[in-house]
Amino acid sequence: MSCYIIEGGTALSGEVEISGAKNAVLPILAAGTALGEIRLKNVPFLSDVSNTLMIIKKLGKKITAEDGGITISGEAVSLEPDSVLSRKMRSSVLFMGALLGKYGEVSIAEPGGCRLGERPVDVHLWAMERLGAKIKCRGEKIECRGRLRGCEITLPIISVGVTENIILAAINAEGVTVIKNSAREPEIDDLIACLNAQGCRIRRRRDIITVEPVSKLYCREHGIMPDRIEAGTYIAMAAATGGELFLKNTRPECMRKILSVFEKTGCIIKTDKDKIYIDAPSRLCALDEVITMPYPFFPTDMQPQLCAVLSLARGKSVIRETLFSARNKHIPELVKMGADIRCISESIFEIRGRDKLSGTDVEAKDLRGGAALVAAALSAEGISRVEGVEYVERGYESLCAKVGLIGGNIRKE
Image (cartoon, rainbow, N blue to C red; front, side):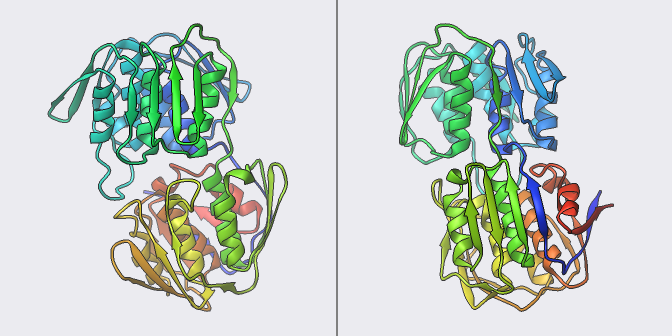
């Protein structure tokens, strides 16, 4: 197992190039199994991306890497995604909709990923049944069969994954599919933009998405959108260390709530078309209450990083996590570093800011919690050892190299 060795206490300064979005590229890669051929640019080099490409290759699709991009082509010869790889990622559930819609059947293992509380696949299965699939659960395998027909589906809960799964299934279904109460995350719009470029006919009006039957498919290149959570994480690192950063290859219009929250802590933030500038104060201001909610509100994927930042703010802050019941595993680790955080409940955290944190040994238990520990360690006095690197590398490309270029003292062992 690897770990990060981080010597904190240095204000980060310089430029960071933001990579393609993890939460956009994974459903788009899954879409490659539902299309004849697709070419992608700005694909981030992440362990989740590598695992997804291995699943696609084992299904029989051809993968070609050239000119800084990836091409997926050919037909699937297997309709059973590799179970070992699937259990490593929550996003593997998206092969259900993609393969079922394209080929009329799929056999898939229960997906894995970070353990953030109850995230059952029941709503995914319910949505596939609404489209006409017959589903059987055999041990740890889920078997889905049937030619899908478009229909109107009103989601009982707002879910990014279920919205994406329905879209991937519906592009090859007979008739029109209408998704109501859909998730509105920009990564879903990137999936829609990619599919439309290939000849699909999908349109959104606020939380209603309409998918029409495909008449003809093309192969057109699509560039993956920048990762707003990676950009937000580097903003958190700058805020925690009192630093000054320029972030390149961003979409500030997708990050309004994130930027607004950090401005309230006292950070100066300026934006251009695809750039973000942050200048953090020497001491941050506390926030009365921050509530995580689906887009366009403050994202749950930034909650742990904000928790680390507010551990250094002047005064008392409260964070209310409304989406994942177990997104709190970073808190005991931050407390080891000297943070004063009290869990009012499993989802409500009261944070009293300290003047400083202290370096120590901590362990990442999930992806975003690991990013929070890196941000805290970069601000802390002394040396920290952050274990659980495999979680962090699921979502951050070249983290050590990028942090090193802006003055952070970090290495991987």
